[in-house]
Length: 366
Image 1: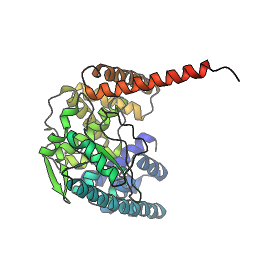
Image 2 (image 1 turned 120 degrees about the vertical axis):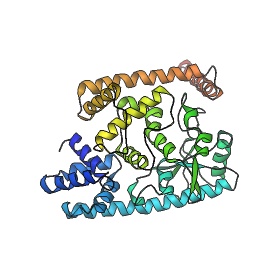
Image 3 (image 1 turned 120 degrees about the horizontal axis):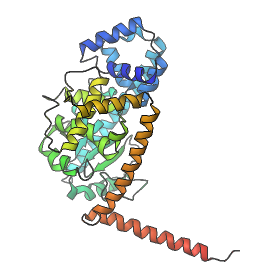
Image 4 (image 1 turned 30 degrees about the horizontal axis):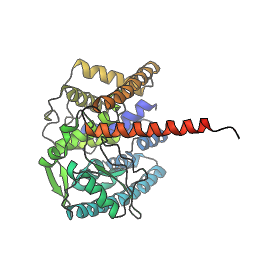
C-alpha cells in the first residue's frame, strides 16, 4: 500500500461506526486484501487518529481481521490516551472553576471542547495536545494573570499582541499545556468567530461552556487553514477531518453555515470536498460541486501522490504567502494598535541589536 492508498483506507475506517456502506467495504477489504499494517500504523499515528482507528474497528467488530500483536498494541495506546484525556477533562474543569470564580467565562475549543461535550463514543478516540479556550478581549490579560497566580507559566512570555493566543502555559503536575485565546482567527477574519459570537451560541456541558456544533465545525475547518495558511499547502490532517465528520453529523446541514465572506465560503467548500472524497462520500459532510472545488481536490490528490511539480508550486505559493503576511503586519501597523505595538517592539529590538553589533565591531582586536 502506498501513502495515498493507506490514507484513504484509514480515513474510511474512521467512518464505519456511522456509515454502514463503508463498514461493509472495509470488512470486504480486510477479508480479501493483504493490508500493510505497518503503513497503516505509520499514517494513522502521523495524523493523530491511531486510537480513533482502533475504537471504530472495535465498535464494528472487525478486530478479528487484524494481527493479534497489533490489536494488543492498539489497546495499550488507546488505554494510555483514555487516561490522559480523563486528566485533561479534570484539568479543564479546574481551570473553568478558577476563572468563573473571577467572573471570567471561558469557552472551550477544539479537542478539549469536544471531550467536554461528549462528541466521541469513547474519550480515548481523540488525541489532544493542549487545552484551548477563549475569553473576551477585555478579560484576556486578567485570565493570563490568574493562571500565573495559579502557578502556570510559559517558557516564552513574549506575546505578539495580534496573535490569537498567549504562548503555551504549563503547570507542574498538570498533564496538558494551556492556550488562552482572545481570538480564533487572525485578521481580517477575526470578527467571524469572536468571543461574543461564540458565546451567543454556546451551551453548557460538564459545567463548562462549549460553542454550538456549527461554530465548532467552523473552528475545526478554518483555524488551521487560515491561521497557519494550510489551505494553500493542502495539508489536511485526518484528526481534523474526523472531527469535522462527527460535528457535521450533529448539525442539520453542513452546507447551511452562516457565512457571507466569499473567500471563507471557498475555503470551507474546498476543504469539505476533500474530506468528502477521503471519507468515501458521507451524506453528512456535503459540499457544493463546482470547478473551484474540483481544481482544489485535483491539486490535493497530486500532493498526496507526491507530485514534484505540484509540491514545487505549493512551496512557491507558501513563500509568497509568508511575504504577504509580513507586509500585512506592516500595513495593519498604521491603523491597528495591536499591530503597531508589535512592530514598534520589533523595531526597538532591531535597533538594540544593531547597536550591539556596532559596539562589537568597534572593539579593537585583542
